[in-house]
Length: 77
Ligand SMILES: [Zn+2]
Image (cartoon, rainbow, N blue to C red; front, top):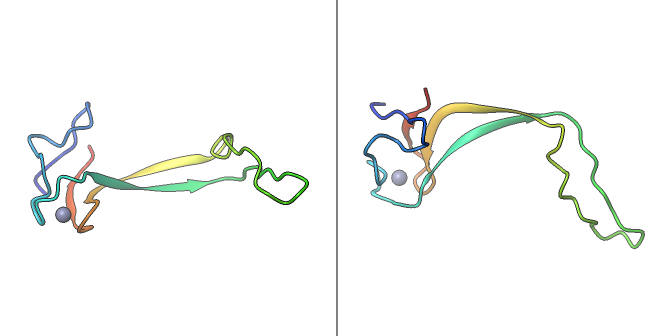
């Protein structure tokens, strides 16, 4: 992998996927752990759960993948 993500989140001069030419963007896998509260209303419907990620631990993985073809396109430093 010859592309590396910079401080601004851009991957060098890369503007599209080198595999499929998609401009749809890229993703990194994120490992999450922890426990959270999922809130319900008394009728069983979902309540507002804006807090759901509070208190979770995140570890972002280094490899960058194309959103469309899922192939690796670079790595984070
Ligand atoms: Zn692609």
